Length: 215
Ligand SMILES: [Zn+2]
Image (tube, rainbow, N blue to C red; front, side, top):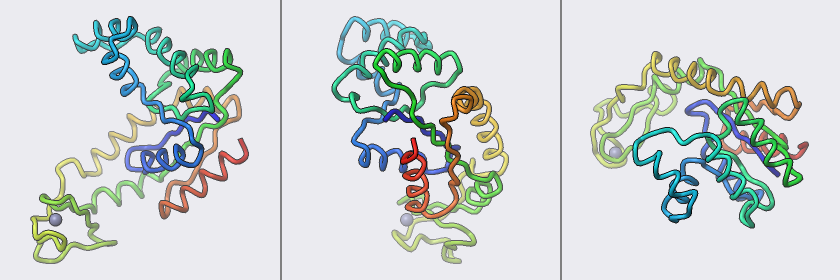
């Protein structure tokens, strides 16, 4: 099964991807990790990556796609993959579809985890964090002690500078802009499942499980 997983920042996408890797026995393919590994391997393709990456330049799509084809044809990804960070544009999605088609495969399901923006704003703006151990609190759902001292380690509890409504809104519009084209591409193929991302982790996992069971 070949899957794409989408989720706005703070929707628990990483956690759910780990569950899918385990449940389906397929790898999560992060283009960033893949390119770094290929570069480190010293292969011809890796050397080409190096030319761009060492100068801080964006690696051209055709090279990323060459790597994608190589990895998708390998034993590791023979049963499918979960794509992470790719495709980001409609042309990339079309190119990925073509590679998969050569292997007799296709994107079987696109899982789009959706969280109401107000819910994310509430989560983020109410969040307080321990400076020392990273323990998180929420003003209403898990209030920190009134003395501002972490119950876990005695450290100082504070609000991170970017835990603001403005930042959340900015990240959300960036996310929407970045994903719209790819979601539209797969929506037209009828493979997108929109999942409610509000709830306990295992509830969301169950919704994802149902969405891929019908793929
Ligand atoms: Zn602490």
